[in-house]
Length: 213
Image (cartoon, rainbow, N blue to C red; front, top):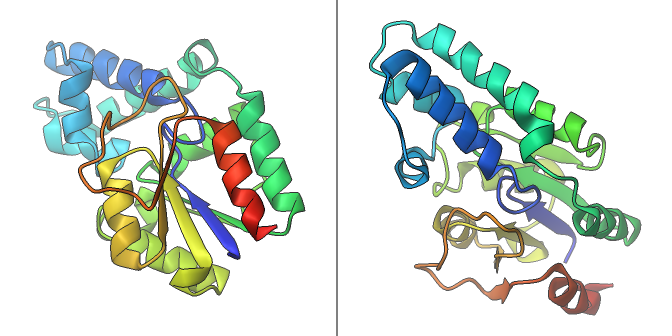
């Protein structure tokens, strides 16, 4: 195993609450409608900007996109706690020589905000966002790009995520799939496709990954 590729929201950072806050505030402000968290999750797949462009009824879509990012950035610290377990895990994996990647449906702009706020800048060998692909997960395009740029074969990599789209993308890319529900807020409570491995705690994952040290 040479490369470990992560999803972001719900996997590396408990960012879903600030995403929900951003979407709810935006749709309330521009469409005067209240969205539940479940309704927002149903929209997931495209980047945040494209979710707004595709689902907002108001004409001022680009203004609404800017409003979303304003809420996301200004409310990030209030909604997203630092996670020392995740920070130690990433540091340990990097020290053990694994290549670290990320494939997320997030926009580059919101990912950069989160990485800066959580002091995760410079950890990953590459990050592929929703802005970098033509087709979002569960399509494997992002993972295939990551494998190519990390210069590893599928059987030398794993993809870790919290949603059905993550597991499906991983299986289609031919990598080891790892389903995790180790943060408070996750996109999928139960997986439709069974991942190769499943963990509910970072501690369990750290024990399992030792076989490749």
